[in-house]
Image 1 (tube, rainbow, N blue to C red):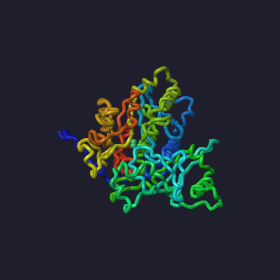
Image 2: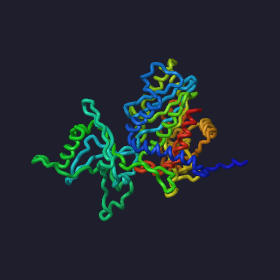
Image 3: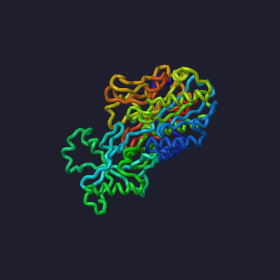
Image 4: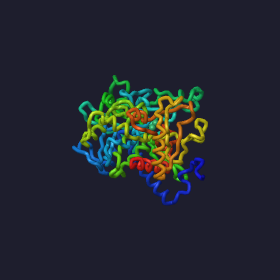
Length: 462
Ligand code: MN
Ligand code: MN
């Protein structure tokens, strides 16, 4: 028997020039998407635009749905569901792929602006699991919205174009960093010190009462540019993200480096996959959730009932709905939780189990379960379902690998998998391996990205 022992090989091995060209072209398109989509709102807006160009219509444009119809629904600009209606009775279940559009970042506080020593700052509250020291002394941009009480919404993006300024969080010089260098990595940079340097020119107006002239000058600039006052920050969502662009990495140009690949790489691969789904047997749904990095809470997170409402609406418009049908549909449904996996980092190999880790370039990673400390909080996919996924991937020549998130007791994590599993859906985590996950510059392999896209396509069509 030649296949008695399992083998894991690089996706680049024995690759033809032709396939390499196809893989790199796909990644170039991904990089372009990544550079336009740094926040969940931008992801949802850009993905919706692409969906519309590919024949998807807003669900309210349909009074009745029929096989082959393509619909989408945008939840509060941060959360997107897309569906292609299948030929089979929807009661037999849906094929769902779910990725998340949010990424770790720094959010401006409700009263962010302050001045000290004639320097103006924006105070931030970090979002998601970050290593704080990674966010100092790198160019940062501000993206988001400010909504005035009138309802007027102002779109903000500063720091992306060459002619725009960037921002930075300063760090102590090594000469005076002796005490800081003795601190634990997690304590050397404090969360409260992750403040953005934004200005240094005092306002020139004669005003003896004003003690914060740099702050006032900044507010004047913002008022001129956006028509806002200091109070308007309270109803804003301004996110601080790395200002640098995603790019090809390596002399052999085999990888992608960029911010927010967790989980925009799975967003892009699954988006491209559903665009190619035509008249599927089972109804296909691709969804991008929000707030995954902070526990999937709130009405744009996966834990909200908005997704159930969307599926109920499909049932209504298919004219098949009846009491409890939604529960039944979920129990017959399958899902790939499309979230990135930690690739083993050879520089930090001690946290991985060498026979159960994901390797960069060796294909899409399947995690039967995540969780931490004795599978705690894990959604553990049933063996029968894992076998089905293996069959689909084998039949479609998908390069995949099974992995676990690090050594037992080394740490752990979770995804949106359990939320759908709790509804009765068969779910397994299946995503692109990443190096330096949650850092401002994450690394993926172009061959894994392309495999992810093919894997998601195969899943939708089976
Ligand atoms: Mn994450
Ligand atoms: Mn993730």
